[in-house]
Length: 103
Image (cartoon, rainbow, N blue to C red; front, side):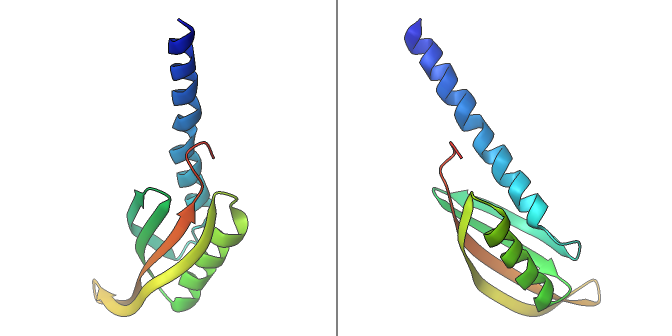
């Protein structure tokens, strides 16, 4: 029974990790930035999205790095001009390191 309790406790602790991570990303997101992809592989998080300007992308990166103890080493991989529904926007991809799921 003790082994089952330990397994349950471990699962409960790990369950909060993804929720906290999504909450931190959401809090860092400026109004003029929209996410199109979010992919976590191990301790790396890849985020893709669109924004009205490079300034908005930079603000998002700064917010991610400064506001969260879960996220570090935010790197811009790609930022390029494109058009979405006849509106000029910046498409971006970035990567960052994420602490383990125990948060």
